[in-house]
Length: 141
Image (cartoon, rainbow, N blue to C red; front, side, top):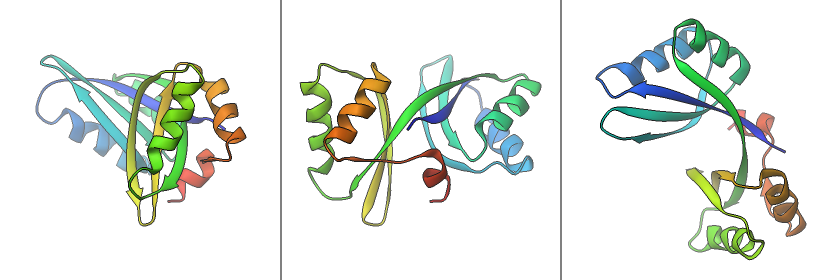
């Protein structure tokens, strides 16, 4: 139950993020979730989009540095302490999180997680009856 995520390497200059949004918008691709990590020279834009394969093709044609990776999306109640349960399970099973980002939608929070052992993490979280979203669920939010 993995989700494809785009990672786009952007020069740290004005308007570069707007270019990505424009290219995707013109192609009819919706951005569902995103995160930006930056330093002084460049940033990494991580995106969950409605059509990741098409987005990757279009962005490459426009000369963006982009790649696809797999992540998981955990849905948990949007209440204090809900995320800590999942994080404890991951820790107790000797896995680490490379990065994560989240967005809340009403009573639920959706957490994009890139663990070091993706398939193992999915199995462990499912065994603990935690809700993981499929790509089709996420794109409909």
